[in-house]
Image 1 (spheres, rainbow over the protein chains, first blue to last red):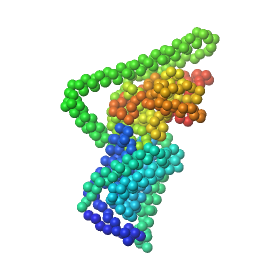
Image 2 (image 1 turned 90 degrees about the vertical axis):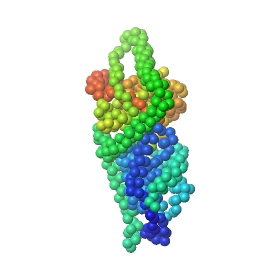
Image 3 (image 1 turned 180 degrees about the vertical axis):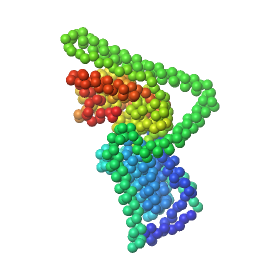
Image 4 (image 1 turned 120 degrees about the horizontal axis):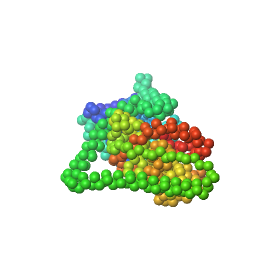
Length: 176
Length: 323
């Protein structure tokens, strides 16, 4: 089911809001966290894809509701922090809260259905996520963290490419 | 007016959620002492308790499907024999490391003895190396951290298997890390290439001491080695035992690259254990013994403290291993 949304001052823009089968968002978020932890033990290429970030972006963009987008981002980020050792709870939470909010806001304004748009969106939000993460670590925790390096650039490209495929898969769970 | 209020509502919610998490961060930074006492935040405890059974099931399924194919359909008896030989090989490797370490120690003691005979007038204090227990528990890696910047693993052994914090985790090839958090049936291992890790180390050839620390890129380095020391690519590095976690003489890796810098050399280390291919590991159950002996050693150390020289891993300078 789809319907038009007039989000506040953007009343001239009509955008489609997608609904999902019940449990899809929760299941995708938990599965992303579990897979991330499971695959991370193998190192190598699996460290280049940030599945929880992709899920945050996808549902933020698709549902186009900044409030639910930021809350989903916060929940996923906090659980991701809980599954790490040296991260205080809230580090990834803050970064993914911003990403969730931004993805939802962007989703209201531009078309995010085309694979190239999705690739670009994930690429940009990956670096935004890393910038917020590194800034939080530096300012609040006094730890050094890279904002940009070659490895992060490669990871953003891989995540963006993987994101296009994952988003196409998640599109199948939309309610008609 | 109503529409403007609706537009700002998500922004207000964003500010509230972010502010709450900043407060949470500040609260945790102030409560770091609690984590050093071994207490785990409740949310972390329950997340691990809920997620890990699924991870364990996933690992078990993957391992058994793989085992079914390679053990029965693919090779039948060859796999069992291979497992037996690998197990024996691992045992012999460990034994070989122990013997190598013993031989190096004998050489060192022989040099001391020669010195003692040449200089009978020099005062000397006798010291005894506390032996390592062979008690260990085999464990399987079931998962890793969901955060890509930290290098930690979850294993399928926990408090019920006598695992405690700060126990050493090794493979027959070399050391892996240490236990940092213990749950009833699961434990978390901090790998030696994590940025928070620190291991007392020394070169086999020169016996020069340093500290192995993880870099931000996941590649460990040996730090606090003076520029005067001659370091060559391929030099073997073993544990020095000064961190009170890893027994002395366990292999850490070899020098991959070394260059002069200020104030210490930058030495990249290629770890002996394949940290990105870990499946089965061993946990040394020696931490409790170390705790019991700590009091006795503290007394011995205080008795001999005037003549004791601080070493890189035991002194209070930055980079001291958090044990």
